[in-house]
Length: 283
Length: 154
Image (tube, rainbow over all chains, first blue to last red; front, side, top):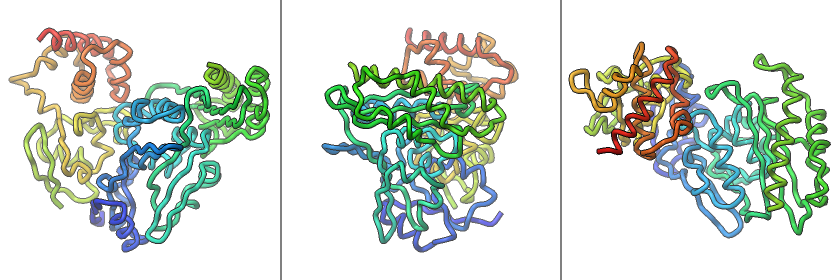
């Protein structure tokens, strides 16, 4: 194995400088969970983000910013304010297992976006914003765009995800529902559904139903999501929307469960997640 | 390269290459309680505590431990002088082949430091990353409840 050089930058600026200097010859390490599995194929330079001041939660009046090195285990409802924070905390608690949640970072979950990465599901449902930086640019990309294609086509050379931003909603303004099924605790999700709704005076003002683990990236179920807009909370037909969500999806085969089973379970999980979210709005 | 860390309360400087895993470096330096099991983050046999939290040393580069506190099962006790937690595991038959035991003990230590009176569900959740292929979970959970009770009575 060729020897690599380990870099331990103490700031984002130092990190970006290193990325620029070693362009094409380096890799960044966050939680390192997956990179460690490829230790025989490491590039000449490894840039460790752990000391780059990217683990934080900053609350602004309208939104909250979470640093990309924030671990799943640190994404608790106490740490993250508002409905969006409670939503992210709920989903983070369902990522992998206890020791892995102590390692996996938000930025890694977003950048890698495996079929089993759960945070992209929640970020897409809330249409959160992904902040990226390089030496020469700062970009903000909405989750709907970010997760519309492979992250390797979105994140440019020399660029890193620095933080994720979500809007601050008070209880009653917004609500969520999240459902996940796994075969065993150590298995990755067989299927996940996230619903995020906002309302004004009893009328739905935004609605997102997102289904995970059926394709390589989470899928925003567009039409059933749109069918809730401008409707009164009490007029939402949960059964109709859930059935429609399952019907509209093209579900990839999975050795762990048949397409038919997963299709059926999308209906079930959508029904549960929608019920929870609507009940949250009605409170 | 040299990696500075505190292992079981003692400052250590260990030699490692950039791609070396923490598990391999610990074992090379005599901390053989952490085991290689699945090698991809499923079984928990390689569990150590980093700054008090269970992590998987088979998926952590040694260089990432720079400046951190690492706690291995050797820090709990030895064959001749086992800790109370280890004695309770043994007395409850919570050790079969023993391969998962260091990870189970460290996950227990981390749990009880943040939650001195865990429910059975909380114990199961705290141990969700540690597999016992002898399937001895009932006795492990019983032992953990006894450890919690013993620690409370002190």
